Image 1 (tube, rainbow, N blue to C red):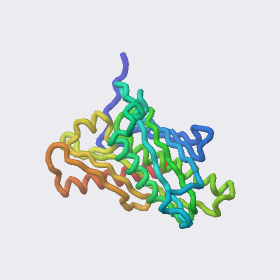
Image 2 (image 1 turned 90 degrees about the vertical axis):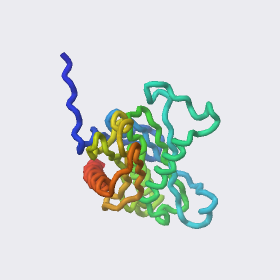
Image 3 (image 1 turned 60 degrees about the horizontal axis):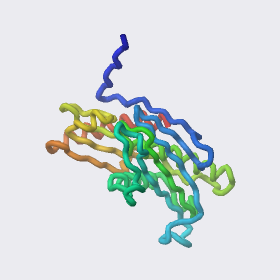
Length: 234
């Protein structure tokens, strides 16, 4: 008889693994396996910056996010079929870009752009958190390559960022929501934080009824503990 997998505790992370150097050509590439959510994050470097930064001596970090058609049980149409990106993907890639820019000294990067592509191979909740965290690992590899190749004297990375989801499930503050948790949670909160304990962004929603300041404090405390473990893995 097949052994039943024990349920995860409310303060427990899913198994997280970073497979660095997963692809050949990107300046930095990482496959992040976050439970059953798998995201391929690649970082590419270009000497072309957005027009508003031309001749400024400052660089830029941006991100693109996409879910592959077979990443969910029901096939998801490619955005190109609709001739536009869906609103959810647009919102997530903007979040990833904002989060990663918080990790970089743009003056030290110089007038070049790093684009971090986050492609969801398999989705089971928390794809934006996996994209930010895996994207940070890919960004670090790209920055290290710029230093190794003599393009930069020092890494422009000033600190790491990572993200994790928390929520309230059946009245209990819960860490790292997979799809089963996320689809039934009373509260869903995504927390982006630096490795020195400062918040970059909080995205929270009461799915059924408003939550109290005490609930928020409990979720933030749980997120900070979870992120502390994630930073150690990184």
